[in-house]
Every structure is written in structure tokens, then in C-alpha cells.
Image (tube, rainbow, N blue to C red; front, side, top):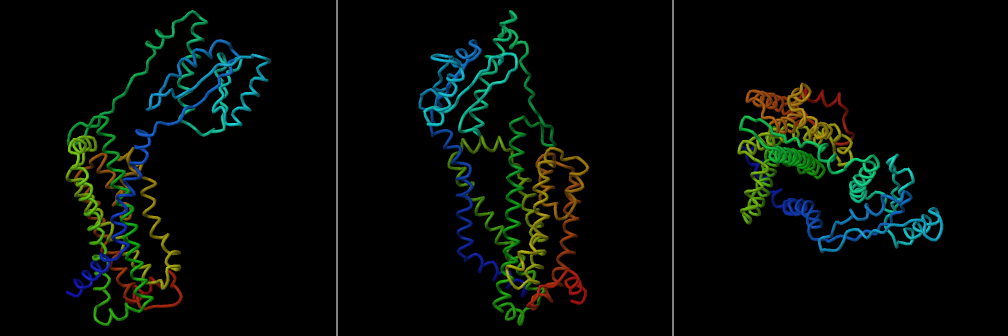
Length: 420
């Protein structure tokens, strides 16, 4: 019964905090802005014109290349303002120096220099102050390449259009067979996006709310509030109450975000229908996400609780956090390997490691739908591990919560668990 009072206190006290209210409201706004701003920039910002000078030492490529630069901006203006230059008024080198001077002064954006042997070597010089504009470079390369190839074939009496049609590459449409049916390529991509989003949300919530448990214990320990609480409740009740109370608050935040997502989605029924068909979210995906959130939070919050119990200051805790944070980071590093090879031996083994299970098994479920016995086995291993970690953490918590001063070493922490 006393555990219930601790759960209620932790839940309501953290629910009223400004940090919870601000993070609950701001996080969706920031996430929406993170995705919306680039999209709005693509669709509504017309872009700038790019001035290009083509120094054609071959005398055969420049005109055709400039003709191919026919893209337009969203406001109808030409994307490229291109001119062809030869050796007018002097040699090519003098002309090149003059054009580079225009780039330096800002009057010109890009200089494309076609060497004399450009047709044979395929080497073209791209000169600009903005050397990392990969989009422009790739676009100019794609437009220049067929012009060069066309000149090579024409020199041998061959027709570029015929050869291009005969050598056109095939398109490989990916279709994935799952237990729920066949997914087309767009739906496969949608599932991958869903998996990445779910795993990243799981990672961020486990990290933030696990550290919230640790931070709350250190604050109450440093202010001696914890001693007053222990005068009326058992350390075990306090331990479980803090974990369950803060975990319930994490679920509340996820529920609020889900309601906001549905509210935004329902405001555009057509968009929502298309999105759901693209992403293919099944009800069991939500169920598994909640199951692994709860179980993952239990095991990680128990570990963060140990740090809070043995440390007296935030500075001491930061030095120990790496031990707990690293097992959270490793699944993120391995996530794309698991997504690409969900049934590989390494992926299967890692998904059974308790500290990796919440994220990696969730990723495997999303992309390959493993057998039900595999999912239940991973859950069973995780539950047993939670029991063992919680038992160890509760014993350390019982002793460490009233310890102040120097941070104990690993041997002393193990000794506390034995004698608690």
C-alpha cells in the first residue's frame, strides 16, 4: 500500500513540473519543425539562379552542354545562366584567369573547364567558391555526361539515342513477403521509416526518463528529504514507487504525443489515409512498442537508480552514467545492420541480450516479423533480467541511499548488495 502512495507522489509531483509541461509541448513542435522546415523550403522557396561559364577547349561540347541546362526554378526563372567561352581576345589561359577573377568578385558562381582531351579522358574541371554544393555538382555532372558520350559515339558514326535505349538499366522493384502479406517497395520503405522512428523514440524516452529517476533520487538525497521519507516507508517501497511513478509519467507523455499526432492527422483525412497506407502501422506494432517501453524502462531505470543511490552529486553521477548509457547507444549503432539483416545470427543473438532487447527486437519485429516464440522468448529473458537487476538495485539502494561523501567503488557496491 505504501508503494502506491510513493507512485502517486512521484507521478503528481513530476506532472506539475514546468520541465514536464514544456518538454511535452515543445518536443512535438520541434520534431514537426525539424521535418517541416526543409519540406517548406523545397516547395515554397524558389531558390537562386546559378551563373555558369563554360570554358570549352574542345570546341565541340560547350554549346550542347549549355542547351541541356534548361531547368527552371519554382517561380519560372531559369535555374542556370550559362555562357560558353573560347579563346576570344587571347589564349584559353588568359580567359580562364579572367573567369576565375569573376568568381572571386562574386560576379560568377561556377566555371566548367573542358580540357582538350575531355572526350578521351572524361575529366572536367569544376571551379567554384562553393565547393561543397553536391546538389549542383551532381546535376551538372548528370547533364554533361550524356553530352560527352554523344560526342564520343558520333565520332565513331554511332547514334546516341539508339544505344541509350538499348543499354537502359532495369528497375528492380522490391517486394517483401511477410506474414501479413506482400509489401510493395513503397510500403517496405514505410515500414523501415516506422521502425527507425519507433526505435529512436524508445531510445530517447528510456534515456530521458531513466535519468529523471536518477536525478530525482540525487536531489532528494542531497536535500535530506529522502531521510524523512525513509522514516515512514521501507526502502523497497520507495525504490519501486519511484520507478513505477516516473515510468507512468513517461507513458502519459507518450499518450499525449499520440493524441496530438492523431488530432493533426484527423484534420486531414486524405493525408492520413495515404500516410497509413505508406507506413503500414499495425495494432500489434503499437502493442509491442508499449511492451518494450515498459520493460526497457524497468531495467534501465533500475540501473540509473543504482547511480542515484551511490552518488551524492550530479558531477559524480555523470562519471558513472557511461556504464548505463553505452548499452543504450550500442543498439542504435547496430540498428541499421539489424534492419538490413534481421535474421542473421548476430542480429538474433543481440536481440536476446536483455539491455539490447527493447530496441533490437522491436526493429526485428518491424522489418521481418520473427516467430511468436522468438518474441516471447526475448520478453521472458527480459523479464527475468529485470527481476535480477531490480533485486540487485533494491539491495544497493537500501544501503546507498543513506550514504554520503566519497563515491563507492564497484567492490563496495557488490558488498552492499550482499549484506543488505
